[in-house]
Image (tube, rainbow, N blue to C red; front, side):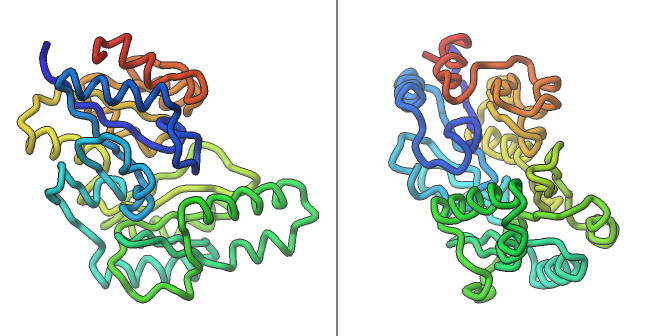
Length: 276
């Protein structure tokens, strides 16, 4: 059997969104696949700090910050934060256009308090009240701190929440030379959710970098994800799989669709493609 390398997204793929507890079926499948000689990597938009609760499980490495930070076993093989000029320019333009920001650093994430203040002011509107509860839960579970605690650490990625697509027109125009805008394909409670990522890296380039480092042919790589920020990863890998709970657009791009997180999708995919 040829050795395969599997890249797993986290939120919506390995775990429920915002959770740090994968189902036991997934953990067991990962252990069995590694025992059979295959590599299994986390490949996520989360920063390294957000991965801490998951690193107790058996993985061969991590791709964090959408490919901006890559670790194989205990060796860092890629590390690419924004330049100070890039960070300042992006943060200023987003703020000037009323786009709420969460900056992701190696050691933590920091978010604009203004977003939750806006939601509290409109809490009587059912969707905003629900989004506020969801946001507070996410910030607590993923250790996201208020922006006032940010001390200028290097930033790998900026997550954005925008009340409209129009507010992103100027940021996209002025930042397009350095950054890709990955926007979710639907509004969540009236807000557009997305992230801006340095053009020097993405999850697809990360798959390529890890395969090259481990000398595994790209055709022997497997990528499993659920949202459009996994698109490059699925396009690069030899075999691409989307979760049933995932984006309809991503399902069209994938080679296969497996059951949802709750339905044991990871174990199903590992069994179907003979990793276990």
